[in-house]
Every structure is written in C-alpha cells, then in structure tokens.
Length: 131
Image (tube, rainbow, N blue to C red; front, side, top):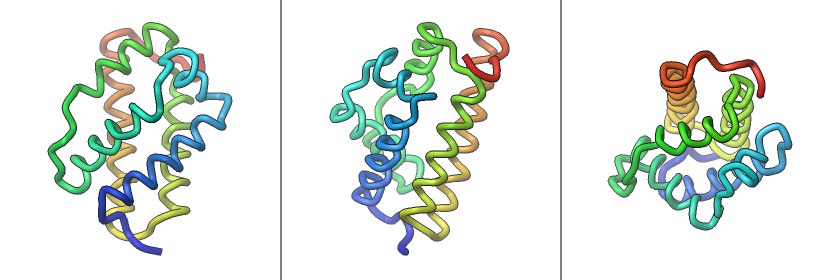
C-alpha cells in the first residue's frame, strides 16, 4: 500500500470515508437529515481542508467550527458521534494507505475531534455520551 501523497489520494480517502459515514445509522442522519449536505458540493471543501492540513495546500477557505456549532444547535452532538467519526476515519485510512502521512492524518483527526469537542463544550456545556 502507498502513503497519502496527492490531492487525488485525499479525494479517494474522503469519498470512501463518507460512504462509511453515510452507511452508519448512528451518525448518517447528521449529514443527511440535520445538515442536509450535498456530498458533491461538500467533498471538495473537505479535500481542501485536509490538503491544507496534510499537504500544504491553500485552497480551504472557512472556519470548520461554525458549521459544527450550527449542527450541534440543531441536533446535539455526543461524544459517541466523535468516536464513530474517528473510528471510520482511521478504518478508512488503514484500508487504503500506510506510511508517515497516513499516520499523520490519523493523528490530526484525533486532535481535531478533541478540539471540536472542547470548543463545543465551552460554548454549549458538556456533551452527553450519545444524543
């Protein structure tokens, strides 16, 4: 297996990752019913975000916390949502890639999940295990 090296690798990773998320009833409703994302529109934004985090790209414009605050206000996020998200992220990377950048992608996702939970708790109070 190869490591994550290109934008095309990130496109493959995120497409596969979102297939897993959308197939998991414990979290899919957040994307399909609550946020009502258009995946064709949303995936390039996510690729830009991860390209900036891992490969030094500069295409991501935005604040990732804003949409998550809005989502939490519509349907409270629980710690299990973050665990599920992280599980599918790690599993998808392990299925498709190996190497230092794949490890870095997993590490950064853990940090991002913890930071998001912390910021949501600062703004709205403690998260429940599941909502």
